[in-house]
Image 1: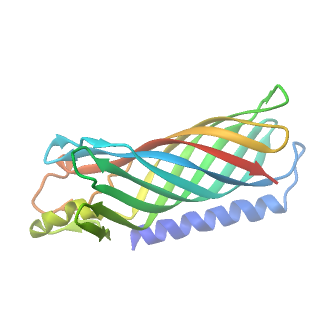
Image 2 (image 1 turned 30 degrees about the vertical axis):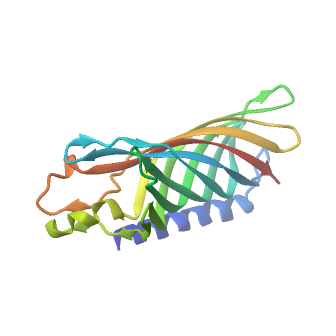
Length: 222
C-alpha cells in the first residue's frame, strides 16, 4: 500500500507541474513538451548471502514524454513519465536474464546554455519508479516476476524471482539540443533503493539489489 501511495502521489505531482505550467508564462518563455526514446544498458548490483552480485549488463529501452518548465534564464525543471525496462544478465554460461518493467517519474533540474547553433543540456535530479511487471528468462522457459517486500524463511528460493515494486534513485544527463528541436543525450542512473525483499531470519544487509545503468536517447520538443 505504501508503494502504491507513493506512486499515486508522484503521478499527481507530475500532473500539478504540467497544469500549472500550462497556465503560466514567464519572461524566459513558456513551457514546452517533448518526446524521448532510447536504449538502456542496465545492471543489478548488490549482495547475495554477503557476496557481491556478479551480473552482466542487459540491453533494454525507454520511451516517454516530458515537460520543460522555465525557472530562470537557461534553467528549467523537467518532469517526465517513462516506460523503461531494467534488469541484468547472469554472468555464467546460461542465458538467464532478469527483465523488470517500470513506469518511471524523473524530475530533472536542467541547465541549457546556448552553444553554437543549439543548446547544451546538463541535468541532475531524482527519479521514482514503480514496477508493473517482468520476467526471468531461463533455458527452461520464462517465469513471471512476483512483487513483495517480505519473504518468509521458507521462501528463499523465490528470492531471485521476487522484487519490491518501488525504486528510487538519481539521474545525471548531458546532451545537446539542435536548432531543429531534436536532441541527443547520454544519461547515467544510480538506484538508491534496495529492490530485493526482506527475508525473515536473514541479515538484510547481506541480501540487497539495486538498479544501475546508463543509456542514450533521442528527443524532440514541440
